[in-house]
Length: 133
Image (cartoon, rainbow, N blue to C red):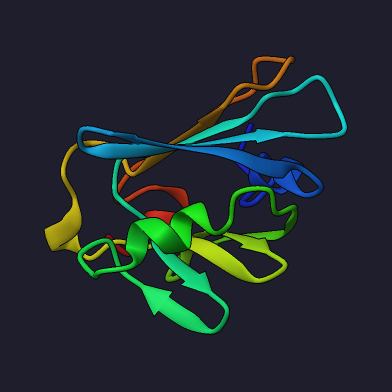
């Protein structure tokens, strides 16, 4: 069965970002919402954050504050497309994953799991939405 872009990611729509965990060299975004699912988006490559019209990269001052500023917001849309990568939209901002090749730190870009039905997705360079890497 072929993987349909944005199929699993779109399940985040309607969920609330309730936690951002900064781990040594990655970030985990935890969601809760209208079902028993407790999705976790683990970003092995640190995402870019857009908040209130400003863009913050992980190397810029204010990036952690911008990411924390999305806590308690509801996911309004998701995007997954080659050339764009993966994006999760909120009312006042978004989290975007489309690293440059120089930003790749391992074999994986991100993983989404935590669904009751055990569905999960791992994004890697050269595959799916990241065919351009």
